[in-house]
Length: 564
Image (cartoon, rainbow, N blue to C red; front, side):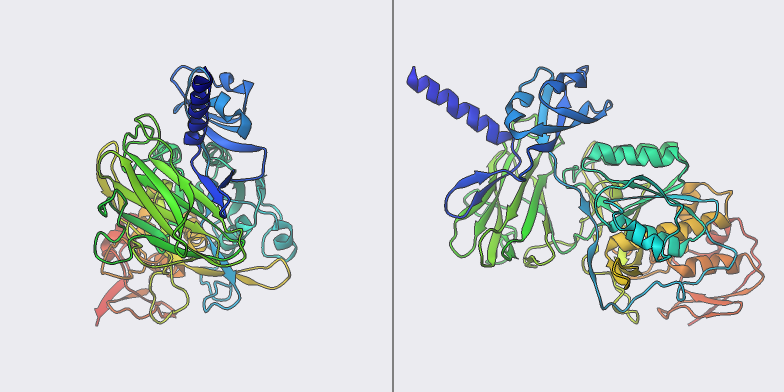
């Protein structure tokens, strides 16, 4: 009887830990601790069809409910996790991963500035009549931006959130399109709350929505709850949706499982002696590592596990070993905090516990001082989630540090995007590029630079508002097409998956204004920057001029002249 009781305890504790997406081992003690010190954490609960979310109220607080997917976002005490998982009608429970805000830490010295003195736009084109909704972490410092005059006082703050990146995005949009009416709604702490933000902004009449939010627990290989919702919104509403591509090119891997001979994945596919992904984590710093593979979401029967180990001692220091048995997600993740006083060089490793060789995808989300080694990283296919939806304008970042030779910012995520379910497709992403560094007001009275695809996306949204105010009879799809067709072609001629159709900036508005006037247009085939003089505009286009005339419904009155 005693043996039976011990076996039952083993089964119970094994079941509890198999539900956790990660477990972290501190130092040499082997002591496990949970992700946060909070008593209540966010989790996603998937219910069997026909089950009412009210069944969860006995041990969790339901924050949001998505009837279409039978999924609830709940706050639950860790000690109540087992009870929640065992409730009648519950299919699965998964701890939520915090959203990623797609910005690069602000720096004092950057060569690019989008100050109003440098940004050109027609005097009578301000974006008036267009409502723009921004979704980011928060606007905690918006009062300072309003007091300094960087933002107007009539912005509609529907949900203030926590953080300051929303303020910077609003400043960029206002700088670009000062006549537009601005709204803000926080992304929140779960994906269902994000969908609610989108719906609320649309209900307020926003024709353009722009976000810089990524959800690492959204599927990488299919459209999840957020992507599916935004796809439906774009198809049913007349809106322009703009989203930051992500800053993940330098912290991403994708490749088919390559057995090193003992069940462990060789990230180099046998080409080098460096078999894993490595990172240096200073004392007190954090890193989150997310692994997925191309099984259907909620239906994975191939079991992979994720580990961190100390490269100096060779000891395993963290593991994520959820059991994939056919009814759970193909997801493992680890959140690591270096609690020692020295820099730790860590290796990221993956083991196949059972099943077939699948395509693996890894994203690393480190603090700014954590160095991810370039060995075995893959820049391509580093866009995921709702920016990968075909109707969304997915915006990458142009490297603003070198205006003489514009390249993509090294961090800027790029395509194409591999989608496996419900059927395989290779989506062309990114769509457009924008400035990777933009000057914004600082809370201490001095300006600073806001960097990342978080800066480029609102730049494109603001210019979209200018064009829509110039062409109010157009719908969102037509404005999207005008933006893409009139972008400044960068990189390979025509569309490419690094820059998309090219860079959208004030030249786009300048071009359209010149097309609508009886001026001249000089179409250049070189990479030279545009030269703006009265009646003359020089630009390399990504689409034939005749097609732009057709898109904008403008009379073909401009004189077009090509030269080499």
